[in-house]
Length: 436
Image 1 (tube, helix red, strand yellow):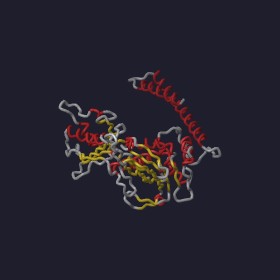
Image 2 (cartoon, helix red, strand yellow):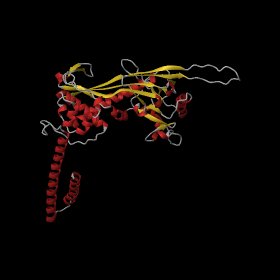
Image 3 (cartoon, helix red, strand yellow):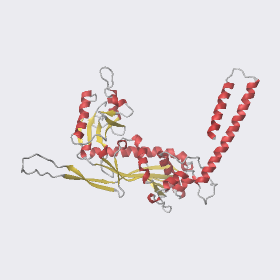
Image 4 (cartoon, one colour):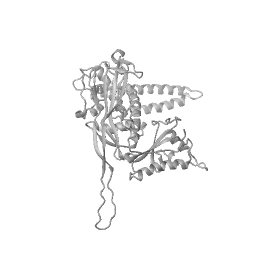
C-alpha cells in the first residue's frame, strides 16, 4: 500500500513540475496546483499513519508475551527479518555491547530493538550458545551458531585472497587436528622372472594444527550505544572487516608461527620456491619462464591444477595487465576479464601481500597454490564478548579504563590454523620486481 501511495506522490509531483515551469499560469492552472498540493499532503499523512502502524506491529510481534508493549527510552526500528551476513554480524555485536551495559541477554536486546526474527535465528542453536555471565565484570558473550560459519567466510572473502581460494575447511572442536601425511610413496621396477622385487619404504610426516586466536578489540562510546542498533551497526561492520580480514589473510600466507601466530603457507618447510627474473621491466619471455617454473613444480609432482590459483600482488598484476605486443594488443588478455586467469589458472589479486621487500624495497611474491590441498582448521568461527568495566591498551600502548572513559569494549575472536596435505601444492616465486 505504501509503495502505491509513494508512486502516486511521484506522479503528482511530475504534474506539479509541469505546471510550475510554465512561463505564465492561468487561473485554472493555479487551481490545479492547489489541488495537487492538497492531495500530496493527504497522501503523506496516510503514509505516516501506515508507517506508525508497521512500527507497532514490529514491537508487538517481537516483544515477549509478558512484557508491556510500551518500552521507555526505546525507539524500535522497522526492520525485516532477513539480513545479509554483514548486517547480522554488526547487529549481534552491538546487541552484545548493549547487553553488557544493562546486563541483559543480547538476544533480548535484539528483540526489543525490533529484530525478533534475527534473535530467533541466533537462539535456534542454543546448544552452541554461550551463557551470559551478568555477575562478572565482563558482561558476557554469545557464540554465532556453527551453521553460519560459511556465511562468515563470505563476510571475510571480498577483501582477501586466502578464503577466495576455497581452502578445505577442517573442524577443530577441541582446538587441535592431527593427521599423518605421506611424504614419499612406494616405487616399482621391472625385473626378470624369479628376481627379487626391490623393497621401498613409504615415509610419513605429521600434519598438526593448533587453533590460533585472532582478536579484534573495538572500544565504543556508551553515548554512541544509545543510538539505534541499526545506526551503530555500520561502524562495527567496518572495524571488524578491517581488523579481522587483513590480519587473517596475511598470516595464512606469511605467518611466522611465533607468538601465537599461524605458520603461513609460504613459510612451511618443504614447499617449492624459485627466484624470479631479476628485473623491474621483465620481458614477456622472462615472465613466461618464471610462471612455467611454478606450474612445472606442481605438475611434475602429480599435484592437480584443478583447484589451483595464482596469488599475486596488485602492483605485479598491474604490470602484467598493461603489457602489450608490437601491435598494441594485450600480451595477457585473459587478465582483463572480470574473473582473470593466467595460463588458464584463476588469478587472485591482493593488496595485502607486501611488495616492498628486499634491499631495494621493491620485491614481492607470486604464489601458485593448489587450494584443494590447503587445510583451513576452524575451532570457532566468530565470537563476541563485551565489557563496560575492563581495562585495555589503546593503539599507542597506553592502558585505558573503559569504565572511567564511559566506553564499552567489543572483543571479536576467531580460532583457526592452516596446514598442507601435500607440500608440493605450493610454489612461490620470490624477489618479484615486476613494475617495481
